[in-house]
Image (cartoon, rainbow, N blue to C red; front, side, top):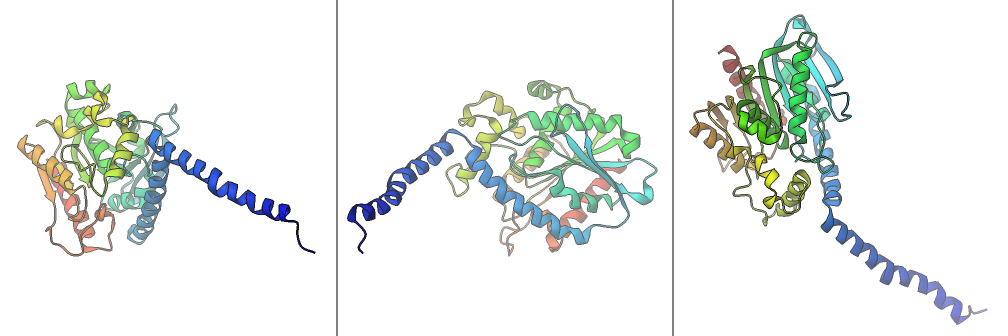
Amino acid sequence: MAEPRGRSSGKWLRPAIVIFTILPLLLLSALIAFQVSPWPSVLLIRRAFNQDAQSASLALEKHVPPALSAQLNEPYDPADPDALLDVFYPSAIADKPLPTIVWVHGGAWVSGSKDDIANYGKVLAGKGYTVVGVDYSLAPGKTFPTPIRQVNAALGYLLKNAERLRIDPDHIVLAGDSGGAHIAAVTANAIAVPSYAAMLGIVPAVERRQLAALLLFCGTYTIDGVDLDGPFGGFLRTVLWAFSGSKDFGSNPNFAAAWVINHVTGEFPPSFISAGNGDPLLPQSIALADRLASRGVRVERLFFASDRQPPLPHEYQFNLDNEAGRFALERSVAFLARQIRQ
């Protein structure tokens, strides 16, 4: 028996309502969400970045040396649930303090964790260092300068627990990659320049004399010359909106202090600065190296020929299966040895 026409029409009407009415409303709502908050875009970026970081960390496992000791998830500020750090050092020399590298992980300020750089930290620890990986609050949940204040608090915690954690308080190295390089550079400049520390609302937890050097890989240090309308424009606008707390980040007076290149002096610590020739942020590293050198700061650069093939990508240094990554490790460790002997 044939189905009545009215019943058949009703069966097809419901999907039509979804397709032509509800679905457009959902799409419009999503579009509005992307315009009024950085969160939707940040969550997409975070997912992609976290996957890449996990892959890089797994690839480093075979390079981790044996016989390391670790203190994991130390709360450097009990009032802050994001304030955790890991400490690694060689077990064979665990009875004395060692020059200490405090590494701030990258992730464009919106992703990542100390776990991402743990294996690289273990590789560095195998070279005779105490290595500390620091967690900090991610944007847009927290904005600038919160991570700088947190890293400063971590330094204070390390000094208070120096003997237990095998920290040499007179030979501290701040290090970082990508957004973490920015945080490390800002923190170092706050320690070196009292007026800059006051601008950030920070009382430095260590003295300038205690900072032996910096290792800065693939960082961002200035908004000058950044192409916000180019291929990476959407990404850059999102992360800067998230980190600054303002969609109009260029007009945010509080965010102007984030561009550390405009505030460095000759008191900035000796620095090893590197980025790959295929890294969109390469001009940032070159600009910082030039500015520091012009201020009389000791700078060692590791850059590569522009026509190098295949191009070395952002965060190339973490690939120790690549000759360039191994060379960067060798050069940076040699640089630290020279600074610590002085």
